[in-house]
Amino acid sequence: MTSITFTGIRTRFGETLANDIPALTIPSGEIVCFVGPSGCGKTTALRTIAGLVMQDSGDIAFGDRVVNDVPPEARNAAMVFQNYALFPHMTVAQNVGFGLSVRGRPAGEIAAKVAEMLEVVQLPQVGERYPRQLSGGQQQRIAVARALATEPDILLFDEPLSNLDAKLREGLRFELRQLLERLGVTTVYVTHDQTEAMVIGDRMLVMNGGRIVQDGRPAEVYRRPVNRFVADFLGASDVIAGTATAPMGERQAVVTPEGLRIEGLGSLAEGAPALACLRPSGVEIAPAGTAGLPAVEILSATDLGDRSEVLLAVGRHRIRAQSGARAGLAAGQQAAMRIDPERCIIVGDEP
Image (tube, rainbow, N blue to C red; front, side, top):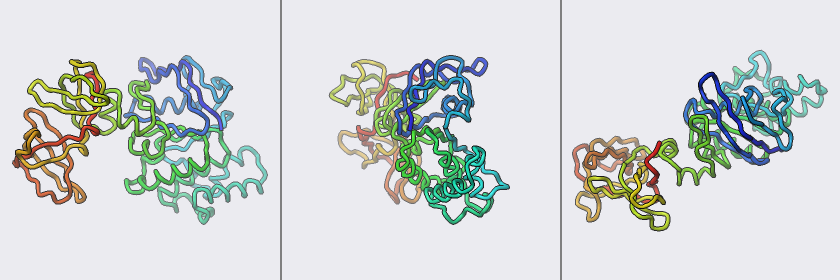
């Protein structure tokens, strides 16, 4: 195992700033997820670690060794790609043992390591098959086995589950997390899927415009995003602008010009421009006329089987809510709205 350190990393592609990471340390054995929308710089950071992209300035170090001039094949970092990149003309066993073959390892050693890796990914029976004879999930696990066979110091994952269907992707998240925990290898995992990052990562780095805008444990980042971008990316779908009240511990409120008051988690100065970022799961529909709650009109209600997704009108604002299955809600109904302060994030009024 080894740590990874970025010092003063800047990378440009023409006029575009791809990465600006002044300082970052990934401790040995940690699973770190880079998340963010397309073009945010997460894959560039990953490829810089791998040696596939050369930074314009700054240093990348593995442990105490600066690897700026070390070619990709000498960095002992293995990558798992989005499209699996298995050789179609080779059997599964040949794919898994390919890296060892290139290094000239003895046939007996290769066979033993291939058998071990297939056991690790729980596919010991598929060694003689070809990739086309495997499901998408099986192919992805074989790609992981191939990466592990060379005993890398660092594992790199580039959107490894994005080609899989939703149900299979959900199951493989947990399998990958358990596998990586067992192995204890320093892991950098790139994804645009915040749920995937929360399941797999020990730590989440949210990127935007080539920069890391928030760094923390996944649950902490989700619960306390530092700005509107992070809150929106991690699931807050509605933003209400107003002015912050004085904080009371971890809580305060945003008051809109029309007088709508929304309580949530925040610590801005009193009177500061503020945004209340609402998660639909934290908005509850109550009977019309419920004392102390804002009146709302239901604009639409969509039954999704296990829950209903509801669009509410609160004056000029539109707010999404979730309700229980078969709630009997319909457009045009009058209701009231209750917001769980623990699921409302209050941040400054900036991007």
